[in-house]
Length: 326
Ligand code: UDP
Image 1: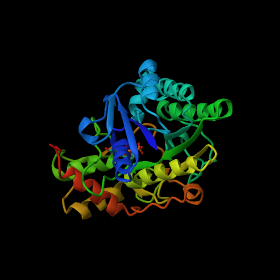
Image 2: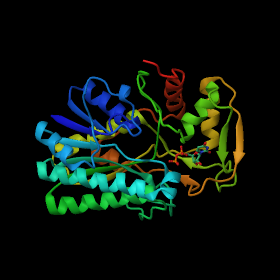
Image 3: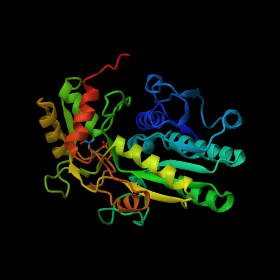
Image 4: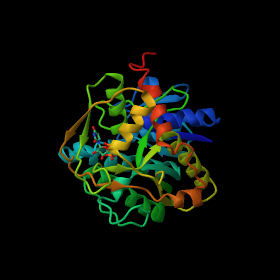
């Protein structure tokens, strides 16, 4: 079996590639290196190309006999998507549509899509299950939800089978310490907290202390990158055994507040971490927690690293290697 990993040089994609290679699968990686890191991909066929380049993608499918595509390449910053929606619709939607068309032409019919909790918008209830209304509140979430709907149409019309995995807050790093989160600029909570712990930043800014939560800070569902990778592997097996197209939430089902994550980081790192209070960040719901029982019952998924201290410890192992010179 040969798998095409699009965006394999990024945070979650690079962990996926490592897992696929470790488990004996043949892998072709495509990345345009707009945000990915070349040194995060080892020992795989690595092609630098943009999936919006229809000719290059068609040639790729002619050269390699691909059985399934995993698609991790997208822009992910909610705030940026508000000010630069064109960038998000061009890449997350239009370029992905090119990829899907090329798959249909090449007769490749299995697609695993990195979707997001942002498809739900401001939740009516938590934990959020898959049937919760989809009312994304920013172009990032809308681009993912539109693509999910396109996938339904592609299944109906062309028989393209897909699994959309709606990640909650991806976090943590490769337990072996080889890979981790490396966004530039970094906007995510845990890596920023750990940069404050290591001294790369003076402090961590807490966006809002007036939410309707026990300590007033936002609650999120942090899910270890290794557990996300495991879910992709199971999704692949599910499609291989003729599973119907589906979408699954991926989260721990347990929420942690911003203050709780900072406290866990103080405990794990043994460092003092200064906080600075700031107003709420636009578009942040108070509480996002996943109901992931469908992924567990249908895919057989069982997160191994649900404990926030483990997630923090693995991310800290990575942060301590900064600047990751290899
Ligand atoms: N957050 C924060 N300070 C930061 C970055 C994030 O207080 O410097 C908060 C943010 O408001 C949200 C939570 O941490 O409530 C997780 O944010 P992140 O950007 O990591 O992920 P998101 O939930 O936006 O996908």
